[in-house]
Image (tube, rainbow, N blue to C red; front, side, top):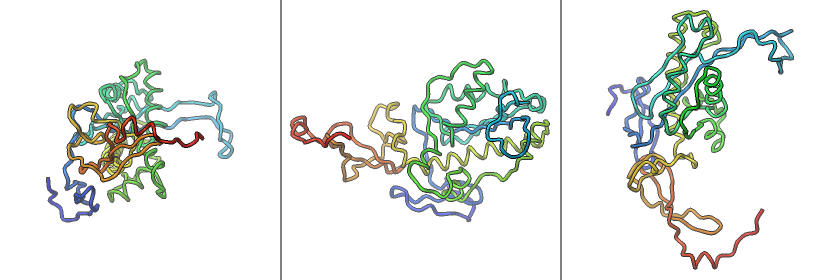
Length: 293
């Protein structure tokens, strides 16, 4: 698939393959395929602010729960299956927004998470998933089926020293594309049931998921604890992306008591290792061990 625009930003060589991205429409020149079997869901939510009683503008680090006038809730959500062109989303109606009623809007994202094997969100472990679980519980939903989580914020913090780990910044330096610019008034207008504001909020939410997917693809080779896609496949594949295009990396992954042949995926660029040891049982018995910490 080739883009019709000429304003193309080169992203360099990834595992021997040149990747380029159109700055005008966002199209990637290289075509990615979703791993068979494993259902990977990228998602993002928007929540409403709380209304509370305070005595002043300063010194409000801790506010008593009795001071809450109106609590937060889930205003909208957006999600997409990895490498699927369709973005799914929902947002409260004007009446629901003024009443702070998120019971209906939660149903769609609950269904998607219930189907997913892996969910991906930026700051998802600390924010999105906990916020959703809170509102699921308060609205009578049972827990979704078990899933594994990838938090791109944690990946960025663990492996790099970016000047900022915000999704907007990561998107700009990795894909030349950031989040849609907005301000707090958009949230207050949504709380008043403004139809245009709700429309703009959903558009903002959907664009966040598209950006999240591109950032995830950039970070993916660095995720050492990535869920093993190979569990859902019969033959030998890359455990990170499911590609068959894997080759010996010319090195080894070693532990204190064993050694394994290392492999590189020529599609996603990630590293993996053979399950079978390079050392025989007899050879391992001859090894000395370092002292425990």
